Image 1 (spheres, rainbow, N blue to C red):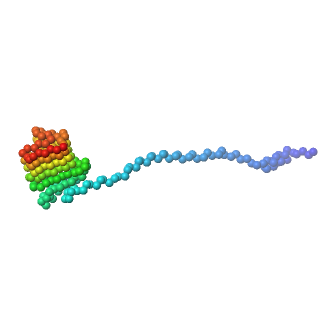
Image 2 (cartoon, rainbow, N blue to C red):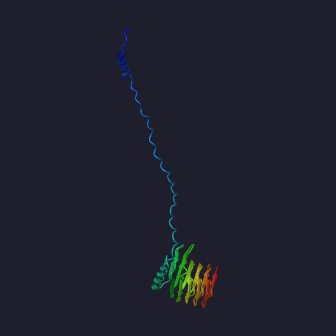
Image 3 (cartoon, one colour):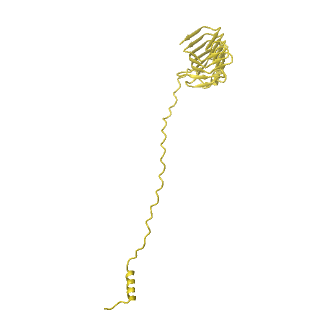
Length: 225
């Protein structure tokens, strides 16, 4: 039996190895990329506000009645009425608040009517002024008004009537009004009849007489409510 030499055996081994499949070392599988961070949770939506309702309509005005939002509107109506020789008729919307830095004056043979309705309107003297000075025969009618923090350095913390005509009030209140001398809320002298229906005075003061009201040398007085 013939024998292979070492060289021929080595060649045969190399030939055998050349036909075997080559196994390559594979790199380890790469890990998947990290997931992106989740977004922060959304803030809850604010609750929806209810729809805004329009303001209630104003009550019908009396024919010839002027609408007033400021004390100057009342003065303008008085001036117009004086020029046209008629009465001055004013309506202040309910819930309105008028701030006075000086009073509204009415003098002459006329009627000044100032009214509101419902909850009424507030007339605020800011502890610096009274609100009305009525003289020269002018008559005054007030309705559904709240006088607060009126002040006078002499008489009539909110209303002063000196030589006026008749004074009539309905559902009117005076709160925190003061006068250095007389009539913390109202002062009436040498005027006509005075009629108060549903009027109230609270925390009003005067230096000498009449913390709520002082009246002298005038007509008849009627108090109701």
